[in-house]
Image 1: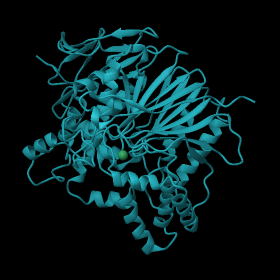
Image 2 (image 1 turned 135 degrees about the vertical axis):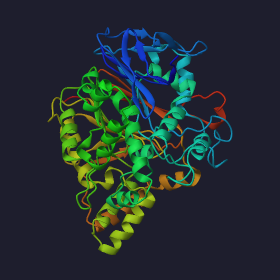
Image 3 (image 1 turned 90 degrees about the horizontal axis):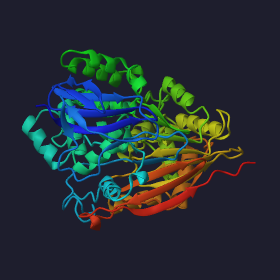
Image 4 (image 1 turned 120 degrees about the vertical axis):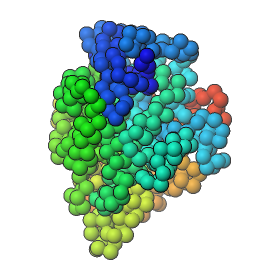
Length: 552
Ligand SMILES: [Fe+2]
């Protein structure tokens, strides 16, 4: 009898619609609340995305998953509350949890120790601590959605279990033995990452949206044109990157889409209609998406009442021609700008890479891009590329023309030139393994909205003491002033947007939550502690109300 391998994951949820994703061990019909879907098959793996519509706004719907008519979820011994679909109520508050960067290693010693105490230590998973709290609080206090901002799986830092699987599967061929090589190995990586019973319950009950970042594919993914050339020269790269895109499309991307967007997706429609294994179809699509930026758009948008969430892909859609580097293609920029226009109380922009960085990092990245573009000559450009790759200088600041274009867009929206100004515009990001809140202003310009950056990383992958010290220095005045002077010397122009930080950065495993109610907002960042590993708990490191600016 067919059974679930992975999921259910509750993905898109609106006032009246929802989608539920599963992986099964053989072809079957999957049913949720009377809505059914036949599995589609890719490389011998079976998946279904069930779409539900005509749901009652503001309802809490306990659900089961039936596979060929047999109840397969929840499991009979599941200790968690019933899994539910909670549809939104127009005008009600929205509670959005978010974070990024989560390695999958066992939750036992030495993996729960700090990295300073044991090199294998990755401390306590913030998502497990979130589940522990949710088990004991009313569902009315749960987040409505969770946004995973990249590095859900680490294709280049695998667990001891995956290492064993890779060793059993392939000999000396392929990428290094502690890295994933192809689609098949990616399926194991997702299974490992999402199989923990606590996490499985969380993702079955809280609507989840997600976007990839570098480690979902490879460290430094798409950092520069030179990096792409280096990777394409490796005999194993093509299989790895096609496997990364194909698995991302199945495991992460399709669940980000609304039912109407899904049925506008020709690949999704094709796999629904296909008779046999869709390996060729999905892999051909992935190969095209790898080579041609216009081959796919991974950015997506969701509305929660009067809050709009626009999630911007800041990795796959890059244009990397030196001298004309862009974080997004022109077509994707147009799409993002269109989605940021309208009448909302809050505009939330998710992008895996922070826009407002520690000032020392910002100026260093801007300087590096100018040098790589030839500001100090060809020899310096070659050295600049080495520094770029060694120090991961790849955030919005390293794409200055796009940083400025985004700053102009933020100022336009905040000044009310793209529709009535929202109370807040908040950029949510991860990647950098620390957390902070920054607030922007635009010198010489008046804006109505508060413009904020909340960065929250990692969920589980903390830095060691030396790495933390180096990053802290990027927040200090002397380092920032020096980096700014060096950037100016390379011809970098002053930024149209300035920002300041609400508190010192925090470096723990952590998760953030943004509660949006009417025109008000509340932000909380919570961390885990290694000593709580047997009973994970969240400890508040920042809790702050964000009132709208007084109207004039
Ligand atoms: Fe990352």
